[in-house]
Length: 120
Image (cartoon, rainbow, N blue to C red; front, side, top):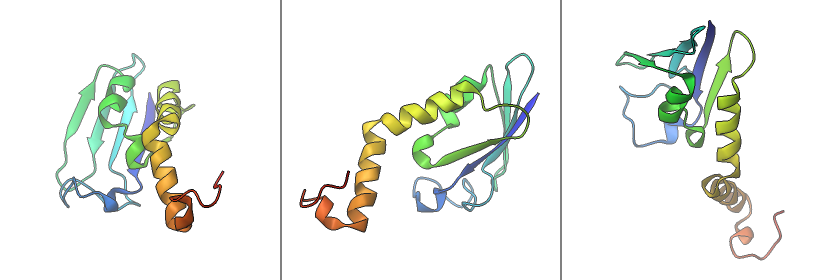
């Protein structure tokens, strides 16, 4: 059995969830286990608590992984599953991720938006 805890570090920025559906950025959103047969269960740590079961960890992260929300999953027992590493790597290569990087860079130096300086 492998235990994990999931944090969404930028949930405070999201307007799609209310105070019953999200915790502060430094508090876990959910915690879970991956059983020896691959099944995965998560327990929501938000104000409205629930438990969700999935056939696989991969199924769970397909629904609740959200690297684009700044999700960080800390694994307490054993190595980080390849499925999570792949999900994060895929997000980092995505256009959405790159547009967030460009938006951040533009906030730091607005001339980047106009192509006045080479930010790379």
